[in-house]
Picture 1 (cartoon, each protein chain N blue to C red):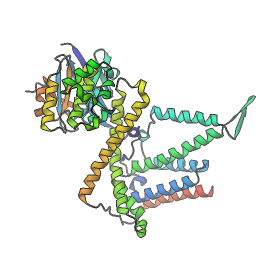
Picture 2: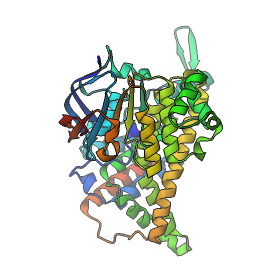
Picture 3: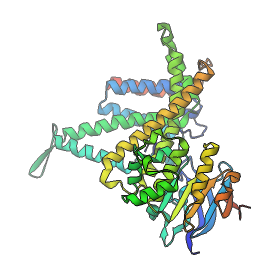
Picture 4: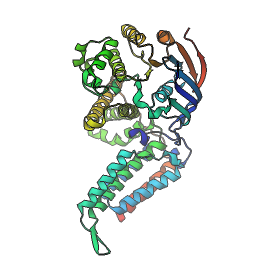
Length: 252
Length: 214
């Protein structure tokens, strides 16, 4: 499932969004996440999706980059919507001779709008930013915390590890899922198989993390350099659009 | 020998229709008779593993046709055994006996497969995580044999194994019944030459050679 989302896979291009540095994109992403998290209303969801659409078009990303949600996820979302509808609540919609309470359904839809909106923003950063630039941006973002004597280098090293491991984990999970689907006796023990699959994925992830952790330990402390180059016009454009979006969320 | 596998004009493009589309196999024709032992060799990125997954029915051709007997290979997955390089990913149950039971409930078939791979009935109680990489690979192979597949596909079976494990695995594979149709994907022909009666070489997704291992 993770594999079909194409997480952190760069799409080469020469757009304003591609030319913008990783720190401006991470900063814009952080601003929007904060704004949406503190005010997850319909208006905020609309602003986030408008912003995401603008960036997608502005980055000239092909439609083929859009993820195709796996059937299991679509089913889970459908079940959640049905449960939301059954939960009832205000407002009430009247039709014909009857009425239906759609408060729960609207709440569920808004929840999907927020979570998928955040996922879309993260995907956009991954599609327009080379993977290797992300730890550098994180180091820049976390730099003020050094004044509090927090171990920022360790945090960034951990982030670097996570960023490198994620595609490998996604590939191994896809492989394990494909192999599981070819096993003959699985329908009668579906829950047990899911647990076994999760345990295998955890074992695989732990092994990968251990290997990379040992490799990083043997190299000694990892200090990711903080880029000190000037902001370019593309950076300012990305930040201006993101700031405007945040301002609209706050004002509305 | 009768034809078992038939590939015609097969091309595979990973992530087709996305910006990350990557051609892996191109216009491949291949016939595999019943009982043949085929070695597939080539450098990294030549399309070997993609061919293994295609022959195992885990992926379908982007263009062309792939048949096992009279059925498309993707519809015949239950008749094909696949052992991958990272065998731990396919050993989902905690113990050897539970893993084998996932493939057949026939205890006789389980023990036969286990003994064919150099284990005994006492090994049924062993935990998967207590086994070495080489032993895990042989248990993965035993599990696939227990289901009595028409076609067995092994992707880099010797990778990551020490010398004794390679010898043990080679002997186990050479002892398979003569009727078993086996495809071994490897980058190291020297180690696996004894396993095959025919070898094909892939280069950049194309068939670049077809002959005998000698």
